[in-house]
Image 1 (tube, helix red, strand yellow):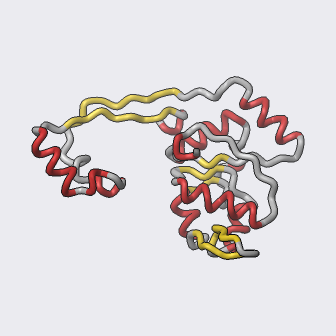
Image 2: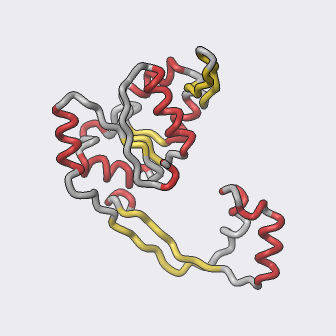
Length: 180
């Protein structure tokens, strides 16, 4: 489903009483972190899987074309599965079929973050800033990367801060709650 640009949702359940649920919450940090949720996400009974079509908004493809004509590179940093992100980037014109297999053009956020050594805080002119730890590796990736998939907010911050460190002019839009 992902390679067709569909967001895949699964429906599953587990039977438990409210006392057991409350005990699990107390023992697992109230499920505050993703790693805390694994305890409740095992031994589930699968019911169904759904593919949701999340169409591009009207005018997106035309906007990307105008940006390209103006010499502006558009990049997509997405929390989506890599195949879903590729499908959306192809539909919008951010990515072309011939670019998919090119090194560093499409990456997972985790791989990107690992290769740049994460981000570090520096103090410049009395102001603290976050920058990629390995700027030389960042430059290699950023010069080619058009799609970063399965991104966390930290991956997105590292990418944007790295571009700023290279003195790029940046404009950003978002549609997700993590991008606020």
